[in-house]
Amino acid sequence: MKLGYLFVPPSGSWAHAPKAPEAGRAQLARSLGFSEFYVPTTGAAARVRALPGPEAHPMLQILSGSHSVAGPQLAYTDQAINRGLAPGRTRLAAPQACEHALLEQSRSGLLPFSTSWVSTDQLSRHWAAHVTGSTYAARKSCPDDWRIARTVLVDDDAARAEAMIKSPDSPCRAYYASLLAPDADDATIETLIDACVLYGDGPSVAHQLDCIRQATAAFGTLVLVDHAWADAARARRSMALFAEMVHESLGSAPEPAPRLERA
Image (tube, one colour):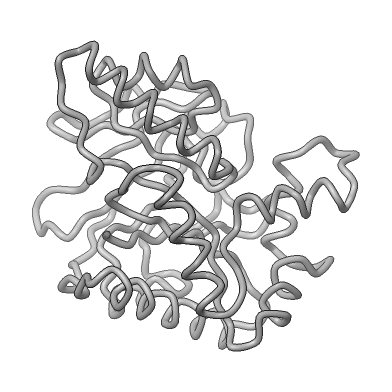
């Protein structure tokens, strides 16, 4: 399983995020063997989006380790179609709130990118829809082509990880709250967080990740959704603990750090 990195800027400032993934903890991610970096770009397409955050951005660029060719591009979201794609790129579809829509997207050759606000139960339906759509098109569905995004926070103290995730001033809490109705209560917000965020100590997060893999199918890339955490040191340690856990539990060695190119 590969690891990807996507930084979510503070609420309300996503459009001003740096275009190069050196921002924030992306340099650390490089050293830990992360192989894909997701960069929202600015432009007219940004103004048509309805959901907050770069995962719903129709101009999301995905930079790979290639020195000459950028990685896949997000071709379709629930809000917009990206018509400015460079030729020859692998095309992804996200988010997929409706399984029927995903089936049609997969039938047309798009690959699934399941966003971080999709529950594990929905993930299993995503893969089934992708397989069905690919089958209709006489195309093989490969688990390695599936990307799943998840906010992840690992700490030696599970209670501290939960506090970082759910505290009133948590950027993660603000992000997931923004996906709900403005009048959503605390219980509703925390229910969404518990359904979609991997947090706790190492064994707990490993178990949560294993539950996703058992409930769905093997997937090729887990995209770590990083936030503007107030405690930067703990955020860096979390990323290191998670990368180590993934490499050890899944037997995947870190890939060479890519040379990152501007989108």
